[in-house]
Image (tube, rainbow, N blue to C red):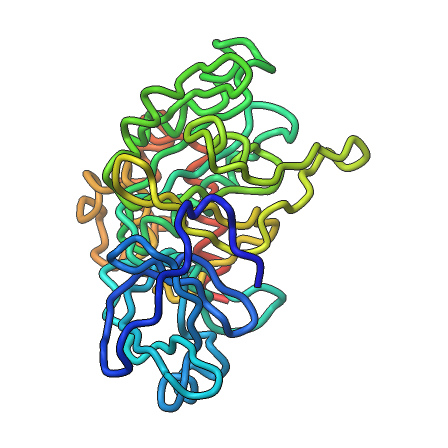
Length: 321
């Protein structure tokens, strides 16, 4: 496989055959995984034996996983992964293409930064809600990054995402061209394991290049015919940051499916609902058609944004189906 130049480190010398080392999976394809060792070197490794059988062709392993490796002095010598440590968190979504099950995008994260553009492509707040629900369902702190703010007025950018600010999400307004908001965002990434997620074409790779010069991630222009971005990241890649921590670049997603969320847990994935849960007339209220629903009353009063509530109803119907 082609090693991403932004990993900054090189393959280290072969250790003794009985020596085990620890590391973090930073990228992988075709059953070969790049693992950043505690020394800072990067080793290409594969799954063998029991792990390969359990993972059904390495599907179980994900970028961000902490693993143990050993060196095989056989012909040819190579690293192989002997253990995958328990994950403390994960960013997972429904497997694409109508398949059942989940796909773990990145493991062991502290936070997710959901990136949308202020324009080109036009933002879709209801799609943003899907990303946020996935983060909430995975127990991950979420931040919203509104990129390309140079394309609209400051008032216009803030109006587009006002309901998410009201819901309690931290929102960063950024521009690669003007440098707006980059310093504050860089400070929030320092020392943490973060992932940038969001649809294609919103400028995730360009944003990362500007935040951390030296990454040199590939970017592509927006297609004028469809106003959508071309995919430039084909798989999640975990980049070690100069000041500590990691930042994962993830593929642009045009299909954002929920998986593994019990419909009864969905209200807890909307932070603005939290103060009112348990205040409905009926203990088993679904917050859709029941009388005496505290959530619906809040929507009518305007204390919960109607658009956010409509996202809840649509996602609940999807999960129930």
